[in-house]
Length: 106
Image (cartoon, rainbow, N blue to C red; front, side, top):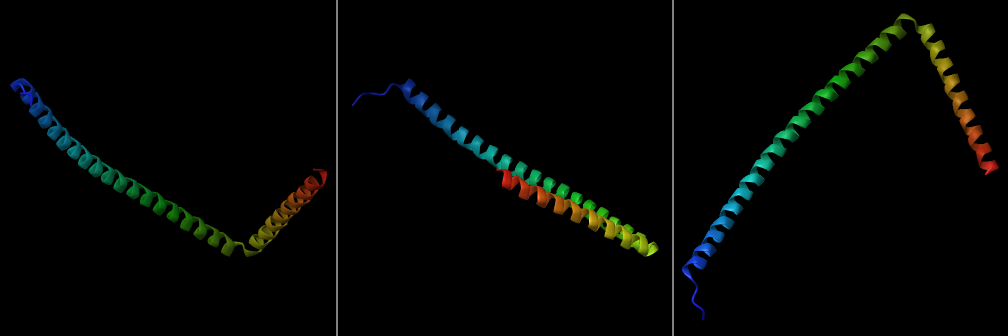
């Protein structure tokens, strides 16, 4: 068996120590990343919650405004709804007719 020189033995021990240090550093880095991701996720959740609350509040306000306008002018509201229905029906019927014609030409 060959005799290992003291320098080689010392270098091997240095490499082992470096690997141990690297393992420790990687573990600390992984822990820091976990904490950072957890904090960022919490921040995003809070932002989403605030946006949802704001949207809900705007929606509630819009509904309240529409209810108030309908109560103020019920006849106008019914006529407006009827006209919108006619327009929507006309658009839908036109699209259906155009779709049928496109199928015949192909």
